[in-house]
Image 1 (cartoon, rainbow, N blue to C red):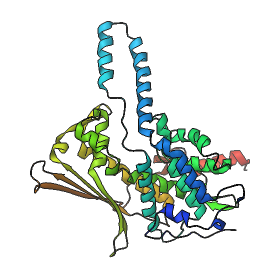
Image 2 (tube, rainbow, N blue to C red):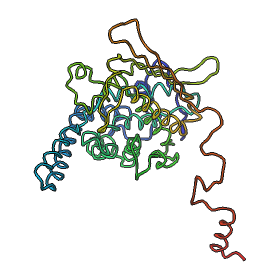
Image 3 (cartoon, rainbow, N blue to C red):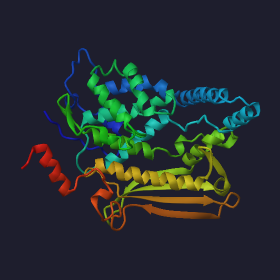
Length: 387
């Protein structure tokens, strides 16, 4: 039996909403042998908590091991002693071990809060309880692969889920769906950045319709919005204990103090508001990122542009249930010694004017492998033996 979606009340987050759902809203299960789906989620959450608490340490340890192996490989191939010392100095100064900002329990809670904010603005196509269960499990799992190292962390969650989630989700197909939702929250898959596109269209799972692309887009964009000040190591910033190669990530998070989705009453447009603030001494500092020097303001520009790309990408899968129309950015640079002096930078990121991409012109300019009308007839004549 197909069930209707259930709206998320403004005063609840999706975790609270899941706990309130009737067991009849989920696929059939044996109460004498199995726990309800809301109870299963709580069990998975508890099982993954120790991993969440060690994500940053695990990523640093994995980065250190990788750097040691790479350094040995590079140095062992150099015969000249002076050149070897020079390359070793470069390796030591490269800050290869990234100290991640918070990827643990606090980050997971923030992603849940961001997902909940978006669901509050759904005016149709509300999540079903079963979809909510799958999404919440994927949120719990999406960053746990970092414990093995930052590289391809999206793909490593499968190993942990098979170990930790199997007792609570014995259905392998259910586990695979959760793993896929977690897998496409970022990075690339088979060299493609369109990771959500690899998911199949809406299909039935345990006799329930599951909109995998919509769920994946909710997770992916909520993760993008969850990089605020709660993720920064403020004590590490103040005491100067964060390595140069990681410092810009913590300063970025520390500067982003407000992330709010609201609706313009006059035009009905839903927009994302980002507010950044930092001192002029931070603005003047050049941070190290990937071996290059970069100002925090430039990092904010780049990150908000990335967020705009993610907005356009994820809205493809979220409309018409939810449409976020623009990102409004405010950056305040406060005078480090005079609290009454500051500079404000404001801009809005949205689609404007007539689209320039794809521009007018021949279709082959954008898809070189597409057949023209003449080429299509030639192809069909050959393939179908047309006379």
